[in-house]
Image (cartoon, rainbow, N blue to C red; front, top):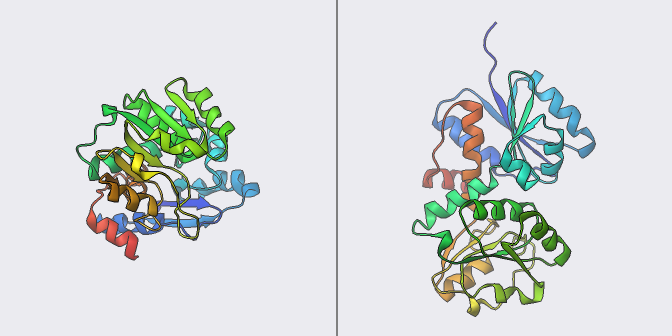
Length: 277
């Protein structure tokens, strides 16, 4: 029998917005790999059945997006320490022994993006201000703590959710009321928006940007548009800004390497391919 063509993909609901097929399709073509990457709109009630069926169809792994990141972690047979700490998975590996291994590469993507586009960034130079307390925030916080940041300021529209993260991650986190978000900025070397505010179709983040440190690195996980109001205002303040597209690109590299055996490169050709289709 001939060897199966390896298949990978991304699952979510909805899934039409995902740029991951462009990302992985570009890598498959660049490295001449005979494989396919397929977007799949999967309902929550079908999730377990789909995960158990796909390996028999030749799938070797998946990316996972909203709203399934927490559910797939619970369904997986094994998980990385990162995924367990974050409480969600965005990457699945279907092992040859039939078990599903769950990982979370969002924190890796976040750090790699800043290392690439703000190469002199030193996360331990000052505190970090994180806006939002959802799943992306959990990944960012875990990554910052792993880098040795001991002063993380956190603000969320729903304070109890932010308090929940403090209870999980410990006293390194200080919670601020939503209307006091700007008070997190003085002394913060890293400022991160993890919310959907500023995304196309959503209201922008309206904050006292004059409180930002002029040498702070400011990044927005939103990448539609690339230059959000948040980043524009930070740039006017003199801050170094990093858009969110690179996080998407970098978070895909560990999964691609595990599935297809090739460590892919994140460069300008990839950015152009993903943005332009």
